[in-house]
Image (cartoon, rainbow, N blue to C red; front, side, top):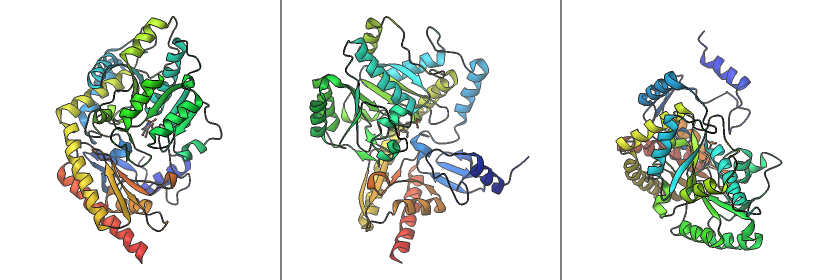
Length: 431
Ligand code: PLP
């Protein structure tokens, strides 16, 4: 039977607990999406909106690329699933791991696969700690991350997330996770000295903080972090879950800063959301130490680590990113997006900052203690643009992350709709 829109909304409210959302809504979901094409999403009522967030920062190649469905079907018809535990493997997983080794910076040459970003981060913490166990430095177990960071919702990833609201959702987080101030190098050094370097396993950072409000690090920040990690023998982990696969105008964002981490987490853009996949890449050195020092088994692995269909989709997705020059497009369109946001900043005094890197951008708002970002996001959605507000940590920011395939005209439309939404909110506030 066909359900009416109203029926679906009622069923949604009754049966579907949404991720990261208010539990109660007055009228059910604002959108029930049914189709996507390029930068556009269409909902069940026929409304067309620009997906200015690539959904969850992940649909990098844009919606509706049927090649991915074809590859998925082909792989599923042939071999939908088989195990990668122990000595079992499959061709798409091997070839994707090889491709990632070619693309990743430095000697990040080996991949442990997961199904998403949170699992990737939890895996990185456990692999880092296991590395220190193998090296005989068993006291190295603390993980340092940054305030305003977001690393996901598994218990380890939650415990490493600097945005306090996510940690406070549960009343018991994992031990041995520590935080340093946003961009303070000195605070990191002080924390390591206070705790004792021999107790620290790893430092983890997003190259550009995403969920925390698109915070781009100052020049040299990551170089200095890398030096401190080297000095104290601490592993450096980068969380490229949002920034990987072209988002910032480089294949991986750490290329902007010429820094090679010891481990790198990825997810989202590896398949542009067409399948659930993530992973951790580890350096040649760590991989070698695992091989040489371990006499046992890596007792860590998910049922879906190296899922053949997801890996086949990942390979095709990367092929499209390369063939369509989407990384270069992200850089060019990203400059235009930032320039457009700066024009808005100059026009509207309550926009106090416009910032970004590639197609990851945000405007920060400050208006007499009132939150305007959520209102702007609501008005933009009515006018045909999906963007997102960040209000955690006493912030008031609107963020954008459109598909890397966005055209110049589509980007102008995005900015036009955004300005109309800002004007609407300005009128409401000043009224
Ligand atoms: N790390 C970062 C930087 C993220 O932005 C996210 C999700 O938004 C995650 C990790 C968690 O990924 P997932 O939601 O796939 O578990």
